[in-house]
Structure formats: C-alpha cells, structure tokens
Image (tube, rainbow, N blue to C red):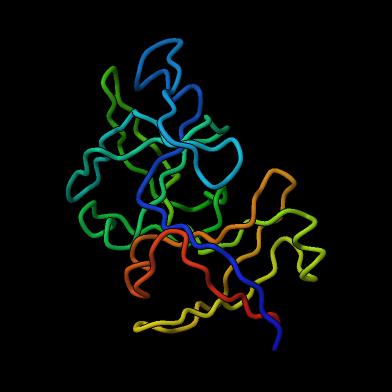
Length: 192
C-alpha cells in the first residue's frame, strides 16, 4: 500500500460573498480587509464578520473569507446547523443546487439567501503536478489515515486539482475534533 503525506487544515464556519452581496451587507464600493493568508494561494481571512439567522436561531461573528466569489456560499459544521435550524447537504464547494438558504446580516444591510448553505465535503487541494505524481485526477476519492489516540481513517476524501492550489487537506471542526487533529498535522493519504 503506497501513501504520501498531506498537511491538514481545520476549517471553522465561514462565508464567501459575491461582490453584490458584499456591497449590500457593507456598503457600495466596500473592499474586504485581509487579516491572514490561508493555505491556498490568494485566499485570506478578513476582519469582516456577519451574523447568520436561521429558523431556530442566529450565529454572530461568522468570518468572511476572501476574495469575493461569483456566488455567496456559507460553509458550516454539522453542529452549527442545529443552532440555526437548517439541514444542508455535504457538498463540494460551489455545488449549491438544492441547498438551503439563510439570512445574512451585515452592518449596512441584510440578504436572504434562497440557497447556498453547505457542509463542505472533506477534500484535498493539489496542483496538476501533484495529481500526476500520485496518479490522481480531479474528482477522485482517497482514504486518509490518522494516527494517535483518536486514530481512524477518513473515507471518501475528494481530490480537487487546479494550478491555483497548494497541497493541503481541509476538514471541518467536527471532523477535526472527532479525530483529535490540529492545524498543520501530517496525515497519510492511502493510494490503492
């Protein structure tokens, strides 16, 4: 059984905004304020935060990640969904068909999303060179082994390939906590 190492990043709840929704929430001509670069080139956490409002409750201080995207997308962990009262599916980023919406409140306005809330599928970003090296392609699935006191195996980890990516695995806070993971830990990708 062949393996290779990948760093893991644990993704907390966050939102990606379209340019139009950013202006509705923060005002005309508003630009995001980067505070921290993320593992993927060109991606960053921002100083800006919003409040999410669902049928059962609200969640303040939800971080916006930049840059803006063509469609607004909310990424939650399963435990977040209970507080808000929504039942989003597990999806690859950008696949928003049939997903529930939420109200998003900013300092200058609010929006009511008809769709756009997901629990992000666990995934590994990689470059085309990485994919060729490990004989993988965009859309493949692999297993990833975790060692330690909460050892286990992540099944069906989605491979995402782009020249704009850097090799990194992303899981949400529920998955990270269940396996006792910390940001930057190295895990073994199993090639079968």
